[in-house]
Image (cartoon, rainbow, N blue to C red; front, side, top):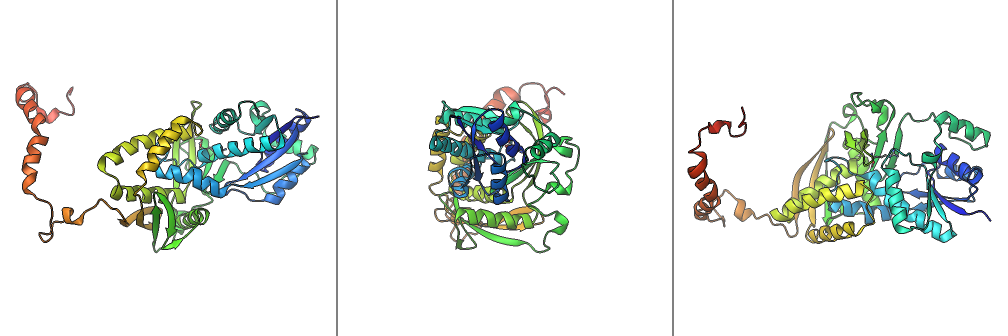
Length: 412
Ligand code: ARG
């Protein structure tokens, strides 16, 4: 009897060819698993192609809610972005896909799982590491890594084996999308000097087509998780979809960057992540009100570590569990509302309030009436705060030759 394999299946040309190849060349009984993270177009077409390619089944799993609840929102709580900008949409999806591949493999008694990632990217690392962590006994087949063929060859292969392909013109880009964002690479983008052609973008309007009037949206968070827009409670999928559409309409969330892949390559990436850009900003703003200076500072260090960990495929690790516990603890009082103005590609905070805000108007006010801050304490505080600098300046710096104007350029 043939051994069973579960293939992470998108329904596109490459994974359809992969399904056929796994069956015919590798002798597997192929079970396709299509994970819907908010990225599925033509489900029926995908099913049909999977069957034409000879898979015994095409199982479509709706994982949208789990994706937001267990992957995206915790990452939002940690304010993670990779290298300062990328909200990690693709990277966050991979551990969930890996987990579902393993679950499916267990359910059908498969001995292997397969994916179509190339051998040059991060996604293969994320899937492989997650699978080998969760199920070390499973064999992992990287179909593209092991049997790389060009697009034309794939088309030919499909035609020869009666696998129907979509009638649309093939995209010149490599893309990946889910509810948190869209990632685009390759084609003319490979030259980082090339301005992205407008056809790169699908979710966000160019600035000359965005509305003349701004939209102001109120986002409510509870313990760091977004729960309502403009006073209307929404389930995560609805809330993120709504913000994504709204942000896209205003041209928000385009990111053009050169990033450092785990495998050592610098790559030029275009991202569209309107909901992520808006929510990350709103969440940080609410933390400004609700976290102390030390919490905020330390949390930004954790955020960096957390982002790298997600990017590098280390989701299912004890280190992650430890960081997640810390982040969850910081979110206890991140409850409140942020008012954001969306306009011409920008998202600007115009108001914020929190149930347990640390902001005190009575301390901050410049009005005499109701001022609780005792200004007479300031002088003594500053004396002590500046004590070391003052002593050192007297004993050392002011007695050394050299112009203090050049302090920041000492070798000039
Ligand atoms: N560079 C991004 C990342 O590593 C996006 C990868 C996009 N993946 C794709 N299959 N096109 O997370």
